Length: 295
Image (cartoon, rainbow, N blue to C red; front, side, top):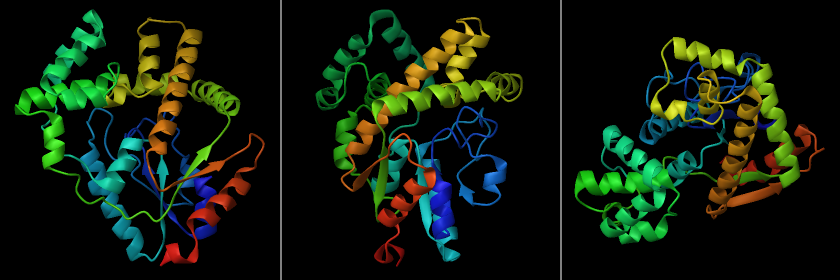
C-alpha cells in the first residue's frame, strides 16, 4: 500500500521498524523485494548487521538525516511501519537513560522465570511506585528497564522522566493514518503470512545468520526468528513453531493497535478483506497528501 502511495505522490519511504534495520533478516521482517526497492526509494533498511545492537537513539539520528536528504530533493517523505516505540520517538523525542546492563537484565529475567514476573513488579513498587502503577506486572521488558535505571542510577525512572522531559521530536508529522482490519481478516492475513515466510525459506535464512554473524539480543527476539531458532534447536515441531509465530504475531498486532490509540493525531482507516490495495492507497493519499500538508 505504501509503495502505491509513493507512486501516486512521488514520495520516498522511511521504514519505522526496529527489525528491518538488520541486514540478512529479510523474510521474517517482510522487507520489500529488491525489485520494488529499485523503483521506490526506501530508507532505514539494512542499516546494521544482525549481530549488532541498534537503539532508538541511533534510529532517530538516521531518520533525521534521511528526512533532510528527501526534503533537499524536494520530495515528500512517508514514514511506514511497524514499531510504535520508534514512532513515539519520532514524534515526541526520547528519554536518554543509563546504558543497558545486560548482566543485570539477564539476572532479572532469570528471577522472573523462576519466581514469576510479579516478584519484579513488587521490587519495582518499592523503588519506584509511580512507575509500578503505570506498568502491568507482566510487562517484563519495561519493568526490567525501570529496575535497571533505578539500580544503576540510584534514582527512579519516573523522576528522570519528570526532570528531563522528552526533547523535541525528530520530525514534524502533519498527519498519521492507521489501517484497521476486522479480527477475522487480520488473523487470516497473519496465517497466510506465516505460511509464506516458511515457504520462502525462513529457516534457511535463520541458519545462514546463525552460521555467520549471529544474532544480537534484540534481533534474536524478533517474532518469527526467536521461534525459528527454537525449532532448529529441537524445542518444538515445525507445525508447533508456525502456530506459535501466529499467536505471537496476533498478540503483537493487538499491542500495536493499543499503542496507536495513544497518538492523538492518528486517523483510523477501516479496510475490508476484499479491498484492492490501490483503492486503500488512494484513500491514504487523500488523507495524508492534501495541499496544505505538502507545503
